[in-house]
Image 1: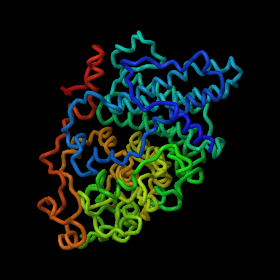
Image 2: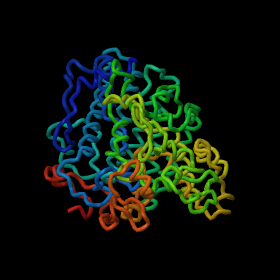
Image 3: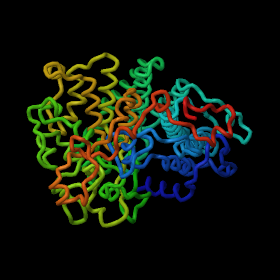
Image 4: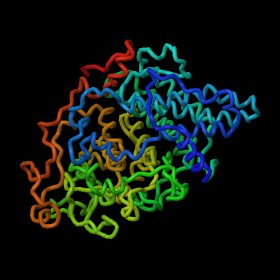
Length: 540
C-alpha cells in the first residue's frame, strides 16, 4: 500500500486549482531544500498522478452512443467558444509540473541519490508530458510547445502554436525515453501497482500514434504511415511482453471490485481510487450516477451495433427477430450487450432488480454498476485507463490501415479473442466475403462495443472523419413497447419518432460543421492574453 500512502500525501500537499501555460510561471518548490532525496522525487512525481483522468462515462454523450437527460452541446454542434477550458488549462499545468521534474530531478544525484532512481522519476515525468500533449493535440490540433520550466518573462508566454507534427516528435521522444527507463509490471510489484510501467508507455504510444496516423490518413493532413507503423509496433511490444492477457472472469466483472489489482492482467494503465474508507486516494459516485439515468444512457445506435451470436449484424443475421418486448433485444446477441446494458432481473439497487428503464433513451447502462456501492454516496472502483483489449484493437486497426487488409492469423490474435469473450463467431476474411461484410467496419464495430462507455467513440469519429455523417442524426433510444413501459416504468409517453422509437433529440436540432467542429476552440482567455495565439478555423 506504499503507493496509495504517497499518493494520498501528494494530493494533500497540492491544490486542485488550474492555471494556464500562458500566464502563470512555474512555482518554485523551495528549490534550495528540495530535490535532495528519493522522497522528494517521489512526492513531486506523485503529484503528476493526480492529473490522471477520472472515469469517462460522460464522454459518450459527445458521440451518438450515449445521451443523458439534456442534449450535449459538443454532440449536437451548439457549443460556443468558452472563456475558460479546464482541459486546456490542466494539460499545461501538468506539462509545467512535468517539465519542472525533468529539469530539476537530476540535482538529487549531487545529494547521493542513485542516478538510476533519478532517471526513473524523470521517465515518469516525460511520460506525463507526452500524455498531456497527446490530449491537447487531439482536441486543439497545433498547440504551444513547452519543454522547460517557465520564468515570468519567458518568451513561451506569448508563443505561437507549434505544428502538431513537431509536437508529436516530442511526444514520441518522451515515450521512448520513458519506455527505456521504466520497468515491466511484473518487476514493479504490488506496492507500485498503478504507477506507470513500460507496457503502459507502449500502450499509450499505440493509442497516440493510431490517432495521429488515422487522422492524417482520413483528413488528408500529412504523412500517416510512420504513425501507423509506430502504433502497430508499440502494440506488438505489449503483446509480445507476455505481461498482459484478457480477463477471464467475465466482461461485466471487469468493472467490479473483483477485477482490481495486479491479478487482473488486462489492466495496463489504471487510475487508483483506493480500496475502502480506510485506504482512500479519492472516490467517486459513478455507480449511482449511472443507475439514475441522469449522466449517460445507451442509445439505439450502440445497442444495434452488437452482433448476433453467428457473427452477423442484426440486418444480416437469420437469428435476429424483431423484439416484441424490451428484454428480447438481448436474445442471441453478443454476450457483452447484456453485460453492458441493463436487462430484466439485473441488480439495480441495493436490494432491487431491474424491470424496465425509465431513462431518456429507454436503456440503462450496467457497466460500473456495483450493488455494494448503492447504499452509499461513494465508490472506490478503479478506472482502467488502458486495457489490453484496446491494445489488441489498436494493433488490428493499424495493421488493416497499413496493409489495406489483415490476415486471419492477426484477426485470431486480436479481434477474435474479444469475440470469444462475447461468445460470438469468429471473423475471417472468407466469412466477411461470404456475407458482404467490410473488414474495416467490423474492426471499428468491435472497438465500439468492446470500449463502449469508456470515452472512445467521439474521438474515433473525429479521427476517421465520419463525425459529419454520424453526429447530425437524431438521437434514438429503445422501441417503445407502450403497455410494458407505461405499466412498469414511464409515467408518460416520451417523444417518439415515426417508427415508434424513443427520440430524446431530433435530427433537426443537431449539426456538425466539418470546416469547424473537427477541432475544439481555444479558450478566449488564452487568446486575449497572447497576441500570437490564433483561434482554430471558423470558431468566431
